[in-house]
Image 1 (tube, rainbow, N blue to C red):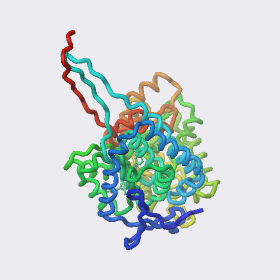
Image 2 (image 1 turned 180 degrees about the horizontal axis):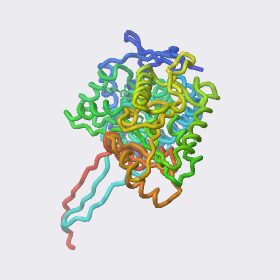
Image 3 (image 1 turned 180 degrees about the vertical axis):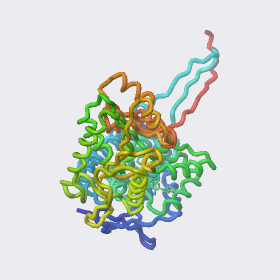
Image 4 (image 1 turned 90 degrees about the vertical axis):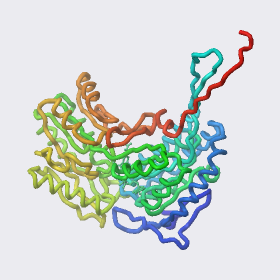
Length: 484
Ligand SMILES: NC(=O)c1ccc[n+]([C@@H]2O[C@H](COP(=O)([O-])OP(=O)(O)OC[C@H]3O[C@@H](n4cnc5c(N)ncnc54)[C@H](O)[C@@H]3O)[C@@H](O)[C@H]2O)c1
Ligand SMILES: O=CCCC(=O)O
């Protein structure tokens, strides 16, 4: 299936292969087989990419919105035409089941389409003046060169969710994808090349994250950092951006609660809890990390959930029967194991799963449900990023909300109920940037996705998403009185 095993960086419209540089191996987490290699780019490579994006900026920003939109629209069409091939590659480097990879490619393409349209609607404002001889207005302008840093869990969608609005706004981009999953991002560069995007408008570098990050942070030519990844690295980037006051937007970790109220449709709640928790083997920023279920329905809900978990097929994502793939690497496996052992030691009951699985060589952990969990357990306080869910029972709704809110994270939360008033009450009380009511898939190109608290700030998607790449210029004109 692979068209290539040696992938290059994309700098100033040219493919830069490893040559004398060392390489980074890209490994299939399902089997631990090496599938390709990319160059270990240097600080100089990163500087060249920034220079190229800087030179490309003015001509790109000078195009009309409709001209920029044309490139994005063609990229959208091309991405959909290639979706099977792109999905297979995504599964190979990331591990998620093929059906999820296909859904991700469609999701990724939807940002190209949305911002192809939204770029045409970047309006300014006129301001009524308090003085007769003044005319005032404010115009949004592209911020300049944007550095985009993306994670491995959505190697395609997190790239287009950043690049599409940046390009639509008139910015140019230097992308650094995660070292575990650079291939999907490189394929997106190939699409941009094929649609004839002018040289330097997008650039991609692979390399040591800290070294490349340092160059991006220290460059005065990079005006904005848009980052998706862990809260730990987000904080480092924010600190590093302070020295030259870059604009920063951060999409960081989550610790999503899912509340099942007494009146909820329990079949729906169990089915959706399963979908939310075990999607991408629990490695989604909005994956449910804690379930809160009303005491009176706990037993029934747990039985339904555990029965569904029992039917999940674990294995290589390329097998069409697979529902749940591997974790991304050994440290992810260690973290999941540690969370389960810690909970077990402190009194949690393992209803299903609870241990590693000897799959075809990769990093597999059985889908796991824990009950009798208490608030002192790690799993109730940290993002697990794996296929384990603790179920915590409550009697009073306000107590559940209070425990759900008792975290530094604030990305997404979910509530299952058929009581409209309770749904509204809970959605307004939960301190999260996104709330799903009977809905665990809130992400869509037309809506503003993003967290609060230590899950970051800034929005991706929606009309809000393009504003991250614009700055307002206020213009004041003194006019002569022509005899009025
Ligand atoms: N809020 C969201 O929309 C969202 C979406 C997806 C993932 N995430 C979060 O991402 C995390 C998982 O992704 P991850 O493990 O790849 O995160 P990570 O923070 O380890 O890495 C993310 C990116 O940052 C780079 N990076 C690491 N150290 C760096 C440094 N010192 N300077 C510059 N770049 C550096 C990595 O190479 C990668 O490209 C989870 O916490 C998840 O919740 C959040
Ligand atoms: O992990 C982040 C994105 C997932 C989603 O938008 O559903």
